[in-house]
Length: 326
Ligand code: UDP
Image (cartoon, rainbow, N blue to C red; front, side, top):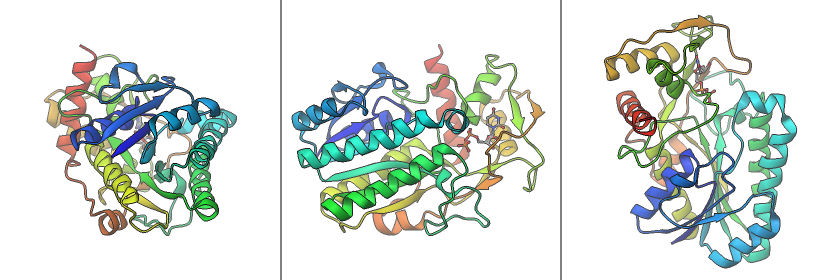
């Protein structure tokens, strides 16, 4: 199949490109390289362009004629989204609108889009199913919720086929160290803890230990990017093969949560190095616990995580970190 990966120079996008190519699909990346990296585009040509550039998007779609699109291009930092909402709305909502319009204009019918657990806000019970109320507590989550609604609107009006994948906490790296996480600034727990382990982040701390959880630190559902990549492939293949035209959202997680402290303990045990860290205040906008019920993805896609044990996640993240910072 011929797949256009928008945002394919980023963390999850590049890993998905590798998995697509491994499966024999042909891959083209559309990326403006604002947060993605040219050297991580290894599995197909790069079409440099911005999702806010409608003419460029149409040109790309006409040239590539993809059977399906996987759309990763979005700003994704919760804290920044609250401080600069316009930046998030313009890019995530406006950019997705351009993609949908360009698909309509050029006759591309299938799209898989990155969504997030942040659409649920602070759920009252765990694990979270897709039927929970959508009630995001930050602009990032709001933009993703609205993106999902736009897909449904375009499906109703123009017969487009879509799937939105709501990731919980993406983690780990390509075990062959061909791609992985490289954010600047880095805000995520595991890469920050690895930077601290390496002496590159002296002020690393646990953001709150007074949450209503067993050890007081936040619980998250960490999912290996290899598992995220395989879910995207199953989702896009299903759309292209004509599986049930009705669009839907699906959670991607393991169904079990780990606290910040449990992650830090696992980092010590996998690396054999001592973690030094302090306790600090809560970060605004962090829900105490987010754990997925991913049974819909199992039912509809036949997907389940195979690489998301905490040791495998941390081993691959640590190997990539050392490789990328050597
Ligand atoms: N966290 C932390 N210290 C850090 C970065 C994150 O204690 O330096 C915590 C954060 O408060 C949250 C968890 O780690 O409870 C996961 O945060 P991350 O940013 O990795 O993902 P999020 O859940 O926000 O998508």
